[in-house]
Image (tube, rainbow, N blue to C red; front, side, top):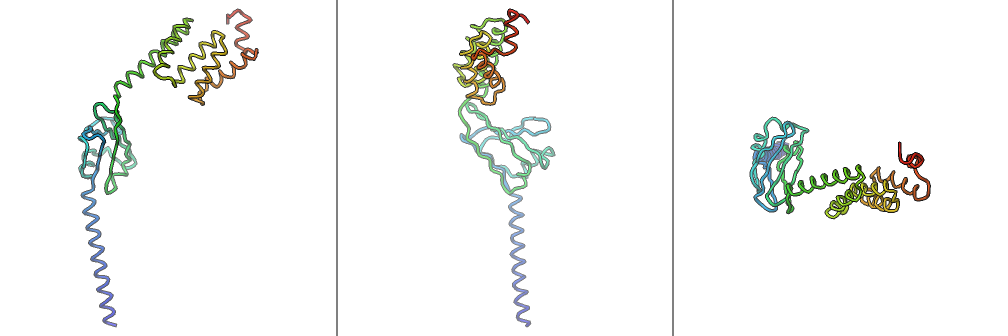
Length: 231
């Protein structure tokens, strides 16, 4: 009996030692857990932007391997449970990448972020977007002053660069509708719906144009016709 008890004590003693060793190992890992950011290509600038003030601060260049404790100290009190913070990876000649990281990830042993940057220029894309909006505004201005041909020219310029831009297609269709060119109007509304089937304006106007093609003018058009186009 005594031998059995000694055997059990020895067994539990080594179990406790093994458990203690495991605790030490986990504790050691938690103090050396890291935050890793890699990019292709390398040497991309890494920034973080916290939710409270939106300020952009630098973390360094990729590849980054930062102890988690150091990262938490860098982020400060703004990193609270349940929050997200934004990681931004930028390199000249490439499109920037944005990654939203939940604060809960910082309780893990390791956080790895890997991004593959695509060639391009964000400034150039922003300029193109502004140019499209300006042309769209100009086309609308020409259409309102019944300079329909000039309006269509501006829409042509947009559709050459962005052939699937449904808003330009819809505006072109509306200009043809005002000119009572219902065949062309229907054609362009249908083209817009191929790109964006949920475009409410195109859905409603397609029904009106089909009605007009069937000889059943919409109520507002019948009223305009009976009064010679006057309200």
